[in-house]
Image (cartoon, rainbow, N blue to C red):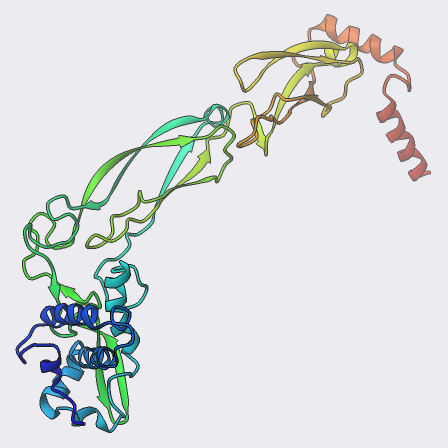
Length: 370
């Protein structure tokens, strides 16, 4: 049985545009789909015939070959009706039947491209990291053009399918027994071109503007913490999804505290007499308060005293780290004659028990030399 002309099958003339071909295919495919006509052999035959015709005419190169040679252009390869592109042809009718249009992964290029991710470096103080804050961020970035709603086309118009690739975004070239496929140079793989670009954005679909964002910084963040703001990056090309914005936090060094995880460390100088006799002193805490530290007599340089739950908050938790106070015994300077005399008198009264570490050290030194 001789095959019917593909244009006749779809009810079209040879001058039909790509849009008309697709519209006619969808209408006929839904009309003759076997699921809508169960048990009908004629409907099944017509449905296959419609798919075969569309499979050829939707492709620019295959359509050109058909216009020149007719069905003979595909007879050597065993027919075009259920070749490698049948699945993509079936997708068109499947989308209309089940509402999946525009959501499949393959198919033709939409021209939409996701916007780039952005990075913003933000410095905060240790006090701000302790309490958390709402930071205001100003950054120049690409935003969707309001005039054309991101399409890049002049308001009232729409991008049209690329004639060079028939909207597929890819072009094929036959070389001997091989067919090579590459990105369409006319539309850069988007599948569509803008004949009347938007004057506001020059067809880009986006514009550069300074945006002001409020960033919530939770209590307990550490140096190097990354905060992701989904969809706050650059606007996508021609209505594509926006990228993400990443806020990278760095902490400004504190005048008194050093941080290790959730714990805080500070060094406090104390006098020789306080270290010898014992005593207490006040130190500030990161929450703005004060606390007293008691030290026993005979405290040595480098001794650490732990203050529980006086450190930084643990991120996303009610717990807090500890604070460690390290004392440094300060050697007195610019002594008066009276002070020197008193120290000399003290030195005469000293014994091995008064300075156990130094006495033990020098005893070992003597043993080594002897």
